[in-house]
Image (cartoon, rainbow, N blue to C red; front, side, top):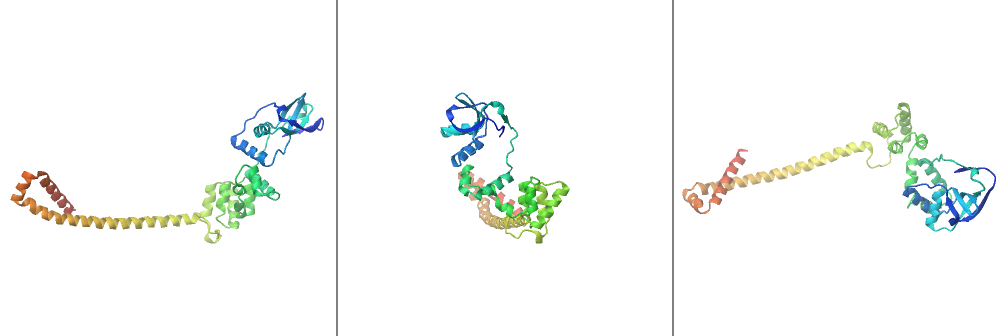
Length: 287
């Protein structure tokens, strides 16, 4: 923005081809696309600040808007024309909106415009996530005030919604007294909250339910392991029993001299397999 002296200032439409930037700026693609969406939806609200020298108009304030309008193919733009560059004093201390200020601005805009128009101006599909009205609705007024002033982070404020508003105010005072407004501090105090001060709203993954859920999950896993153990141990016992029965018949084969001689001459690999089977069955039986 700029400070203007009330002299030699006039408003007029200027062909964009006659505009010449005095200084160039860079902007992130995200902010540039947001500006494009705003210009398409709402149009140019703030005129360019220019200085006329002959047929040329030097842009004193508005280079990013100028670049966007060129990309959009706009031919004429409204300008505030100064007679001298000396009348212009740039203000480089730009104060950006905080998230809480942006929420208040959006709520005020919703009093006159519909949500779709506002979202289009911001280059967004929806502004529901930006408004975050549910969070403010569940917070104690003191917590809301602290959040808007940046005294506590939004993550800590969200954690406080697990308890009733009076408990929220109590935890907020503890944060202020200890000088600790971190999420970790908020979580610790929420976990220490008595059951009657917890929020009655049904919430998934509430802090005090996470421990119980962990226990339930552990019991479930242990039950499954026990079932698997019973199944495989039963299968193993059956295998050992069948192996022992088989070893009885195999022992009769390899201990008979005639059968053993026949196997040694004609099927030595079968005899070797039978002997290893007997050795294995003896090991299993010993176990």
